[in-house]
Image (tube, rainbow, N blue to C red):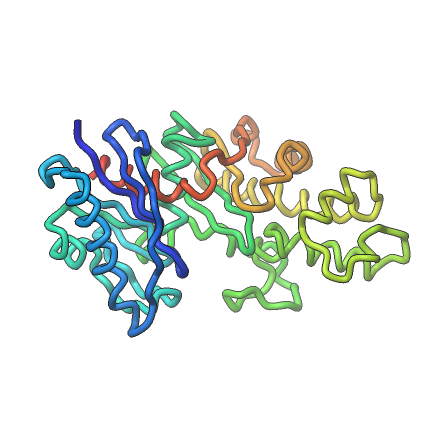
Length: 312
């Protein structure tokens, strides 16, 4: 049996998982992400963790297929990172640098694309060759899998679906600097934004009025309890989301759209809310696209990173 490592590199911690060739996760652990000094210690730390694991368990390097990495920044098909602000990196050649440190094959990708690959392989899109992952968290991330492979694009920015503009007249700026991005309405913070605007535009009673710092979860909980204003805000979110995902599907025509991130914890309520708007806005040939919830949680990136090595 052959084995390998999947690494999900975040701004605070590095998640490392050890897999067998079938994709069974055999072990996982974390090390801190040391971003001081332009992140110069990050790849040496990963190398030390991997080589230390092999030594501690008596595993011969010849049994290792390689190390896959998901990185929070644009990564091209040669595994070169084109600047990653969260890590302090400029242009960084993952394959050359980490390969030299470990003597193992290395393959890297953008973390959202890699998470999508994980969900397509072992998660909500299992056995699907064509899939879109929309991660609805603090922002909206995404990954597109076509023909079983992630779409990186020319500049490593393929799959940045959260920055599709839905409302050009939006007065508030998105974190990316543009106005009216899907992220501003379909993320957890977007749900709160829409709910606050709904409150401001009405004197209708709502349990949300007694919560000065309500969250996305509070909005969904209020909606489940029958709060009319919360339901109206959620209906607006569902419309944004349905239109947004219909536009994405018009371009890539996936078999399934997998929803992940904190907003997806709303579960079937979210799927049922988005479905009619997706049907309204989708190109007719895409209306059969299936929706599913992500299954791998925080392990999606590690699974997808290891799959990069299998697909090399």
